[in-house]
Amino acid sequence: MTYLPNATHDPTLRSWVTSANDPTTDFPIQNLPFGIFKPLRSTQRSTESARVGVAIGDQILNLYACQEVGLLTGLPKVIQAACRESSLNQLMGLGERAAHALRNILSQLLQVNTTQPKNELSILTPMSDAELLLPATIGDYTDFYASIFHATNVGQLFRPNNPLLPNYKHIPIAYQGRASSLAVSGTPV
Image (tube, rainbow, N blue to C red; front, side, top):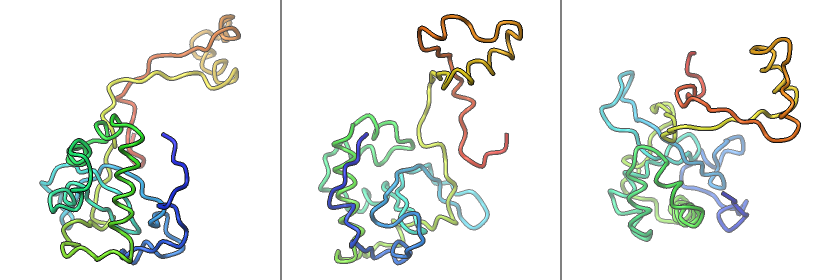
């Protein structure tokens, strides 16, 4: 997906989410990364399902909640439906145009010159009260050797006397990966 600079990247934009205006934040209004989270209640896990969210300052904008209260009505129904999912698969499957349309609506919603939603508390979750989850359901993946050194080092594990097979220099070498080996950062292994 290619994100070319547009009006949502304007460095002068400010948000009504005060922490997004802090110059040290990783998530100003110009950077609205998508993810999946589960709200927590105090120290116990919430019974609420995983939700699509967007980081803004020290908060997460809950897109399911935004859709529920009518803040995403300007979007096509298929994008609204993707905002109700528990992974990013459906949203990613809609392609670049859908992502740009959603980003534009979210940027407008979060700008300081926009009327702050009355239901602010129902659509924002403090990051400190959320558990970040694997953002996509991954069925399978293929991994490639990144360099001749990578291929040689792995080859030494399986074939100490002949670590680099001759075909490596002629065609890219890939191998089947395990989806079970993917985890959210910070997960103990």
